[in-house]
Figure 1 (cartoon, chains in turn orange, brown):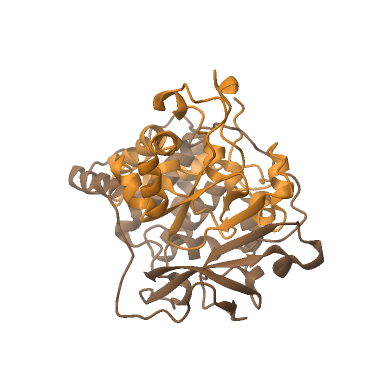
Figure 2 (cartoon, rainbow over the protein chains, first blue to last red; figure 1 turned 135 degrees about the horizontal axis):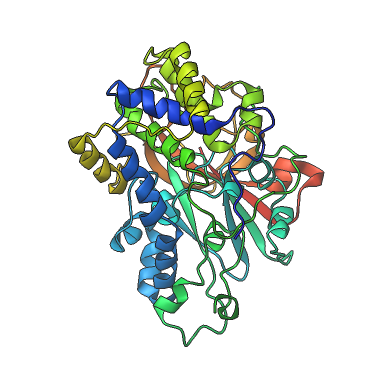
Length: 206
Length: 218
C-alpha cells in the first residue's frame, strides 16, 4: 500500500520532526509531559482502536436483525454492547444505506469522526478537497472513489459539526449468505463505513 | 465572514490526492507524538479557554492552508505553550536546531503512572455531554427553519454555507454543551441540538447535483 506523508500541502514549512521532538524534550525536562501517557495514546490508536472495531459492529448488524434494530435506534449503546466507546464517541448515530438511500459523512470544519469505531481519520477525510467538495458535489466526489450511483438513489451527506458522530451501515454485499459473521468482518471496509464506497464483495476480499 | 477552515462548498481544490484504503494511523513518528502530546498536555490547560479547535482555526490562514493536519496540531500546541509561558521561543528554536543537527539524539523520558492509568481510562470511557436541564425544544420534526446570518463569537460550529438557508428539522438530539456561542473563558452553555436537512437545490442553486440532501446538527 502506498503511504502519503501528512505534508501534502507543504511548500515552505520547516521539517516538523525536529520541532515535535524539541517540544517533547523540553516538556519532559520541565516535568510537564508524561512520556508514558503519550505512549499509551499512540499505542491505543495504532493497535487497538480503528476501523476493525466498526467492521465487527457492521458484521453483527448484517447477521443479527435484532442487534441491527438496536444499533439503528441507539448507536452508542449498541456499539458499547460490543465493548467499544470512549473519546470522540459520546453519541454515535448509525445511518443505514439501502437500495434507495446512500449516506456519506464529512466534517467540513475540521475532522469530526467516530473514534471508538473507526479510529483516527485517514488523510483523505481530513483533506481540504474532501471537506470542501463533499457537501456540494457528493456524486463527483464518490466518483473519485470509484462509486457511481444511479440518479434515483438519494444521497445524504452528513456534515458532522457537533457531538454527534456518524457511522454508515453499508448494505450487505450480494452472494454472502454462506459467510459467517467473522468472514463478513473483512468486507466492511473503512471507506464503506464513512460512505464513500460500498462494502467489498467476497471476490475482492478473498 | 468566516475563517479559512470553513471550506464546505468551496470549489476548485482539485481531486482528492490520497485514496489509500488502508493507511497507518500515523505516517511518521512525530505525528503520533504530536497527537499524544496534545491530549496529554490538556492537564495543563495549554489551549484553554477554548481548546484545540479554536486554536487551530486561529492559525494564520496561509499556515492553515499550507500545513498538513498534524503540522497544524503542532503549530497550535507550540503557540499555546508559548502564549502560556511554558516555553520561550528562544529555547524552543535552540532545541529544534540542536535536534536537527543531531538526529540520533534520544528524547528524555519522564513517567507518571497514576496519570497514565487515569488517562488510559478516559480513552475508553464515555463522557456523555448530553444534558437535560429543563430546556424545552423550540422546534419539532418537520418544521421549516431558516439559519440566522450571524457572526460567530470566535469558534463556531455553524458552517458558512448554511447561513440564510432554509431547511427542515429532522430530529431532536436533546440538550448538549455546544461550543457555538462560547465566549472566551466561559463554559459552553447547554443548547438544544437539532438535525436539519437542506436540499442541495436550496444550498447550491442551479449548479446543484440531483437528488441529494445535506444533514447538519445545529
